[in-house]
Amino acid sequence: MKMLFGDRASDNIASRGIRSMRIFAMNSRVPLAILLTVGLAVIFNFACGDFDNENEFSSDIEEYDNRFFALDFRSDSTAISDLEAHFFTTFPHDDPTEGDVVYDRSQWINPVMIELKKAEGLYLYVKSRGDSLKFDSVRLTSKAYYNLDDETPGIVFVFKGELPSARGLWPAWWLNGSMQETWIYEGNEQSITDSNLDHYSGRGRFYNTPSAVNVTDWPGAGEIDIIETINGTNVIHNTIHTCPQMCDSKWNNDDEIINCANATPHDPNSGCSGTPYETTSPAGTFACVWERSSIRFYFWSPNEEVRFAGGPLSGKPDPDLWNAENLKNEVQLLETDAECDETLHQEWQCASCDSSSSCTFKNMKVIFNITLCGKWAGAEFDDTDDSLTHCRQFIFGEGRDTIDNQFLRIEYISVSRI
Image (cartoon, rainbow, N blue to C red; front, side, top):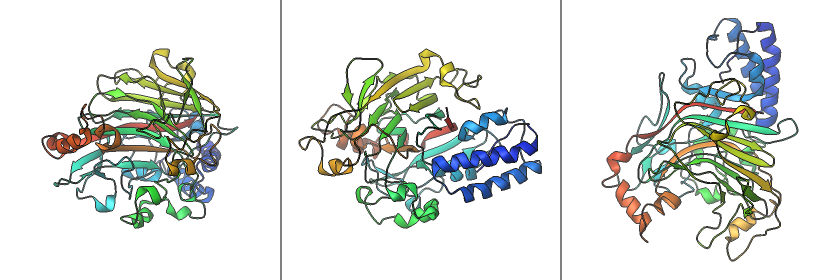
């Protein structure tokens, strides 16, 4: 875990650093003893002059009290080990969206699926396996999980980078929650390593195999989709998924009230969504502000200034200072009296929702992934009844070379208390 400090006196570093570790432990549930051990090592390294005080994200130690973490992958001081300190880099299960990808690192055929390029960022690839069954792909899941409380009334999530864009592709950045013990490491803190996840490889389907990166009680703790785009349209979608009896919603000050399960005969949890917005390319800075009664989604194009005081890439992001034109969608979260409907919702879904009767998102983890075809990109690949079949024929046929080596590039990511 790499923490970046400013040029304050080193005698303040220890007390502030340990306090930040304690706050992080309370919110992420990672054992405080482990964090203190890492923190003391960091402080020792600082005393030995191991930090770069000129780092552009290290201007003020006070600002870092608000951050759970920040990773600048264009900085020389950030390494793959920093990624591994904060994210699982494997998903040893089938793709829950039924895409044609392998997220399980122990089954990858391609040797380089995650690559850090100097001054460019972190690359997550999708690569051909040379057959007509799957592509290797990457799914990152944060080790920490996040909750709102009296000390943390709001959290801002920031990502700067570039998503892949081509027919058949479905990249995403999102938050997912769960109340399962494996998700929050209860009684098994040692599960927070990729190596310990490897034993799940090939052992079970995603729908009946809970793990630290997979849930089977979805959507009982909620899901927030910050970026989803399909089939090279460069149209960004913001969506929320909950149980029917969790949340109603009002988007962008519209009077219409929409349930955030929003079940249809074809999709038992299509969710509630804002207005899709089109980008020149799926690149730039994206942010999500999560508060108890509202969620806001922001976007800045690649050339817009994002490092200003209080900006999304500043040490202390302050959404109150962001321009209105960068706000793409805002949703008000409302309690609801809706119930599971056996004619619309599947049995497993209603079972997952038994204890989810309040509009509260819990234990949210940060996820990046790239999938191919699947339930959405495949279903909307074209306007025919055989859309999914045509999508698969394309990615394993004429589109294979286009898909091979597509990537999601992360320049910067942070999670901060506001």
